[in-house]
Length: 214
Image (cartoon, rainbow, N blue to C red):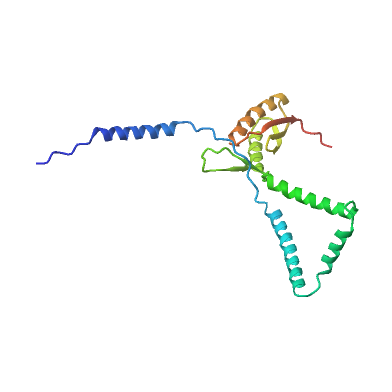
């Protein structure tokens, strides 16, 4: 006759440890995410324009070279350009203007390649390494504006959120201005931290009375 099957105490201990770890993970406060940089723009419009200009110039040049190889005379514009470049001095006004325009375009493209762009998107803290999120400035301004309207005494609010600063301009029709400003600083300070941005913008609050009508 076979002996009855018994549950091993090790399994119970292992299950107990697993449950304890899960409970600890659920009750552990969320860690503060790491700061992250701005989102990089795809630069579709400048890249498309530069590609079209290069494609058109290379196509015309290749056509002219093929035409010369076939025994036909080169295009008039290329012969004129070659003659002007050979005869004009370097300090000529047209040469200086052309060089300045080319240098400005090159500097513009260089700056576009080095700067991230997407200034309207504020990066948020990366709580999980695999997830990267952003918040639009208009959405952040709307959250702060709605929170400011909940403060007693506030009649209207204008909010402008930048990367390093959030400007709040409120109009109060009753209560002391210092009291309203103090409540706005406290309420909006919590709201700014609650946005979860990678870099909390500095808060600037101004409160004034409504202007006289007429």
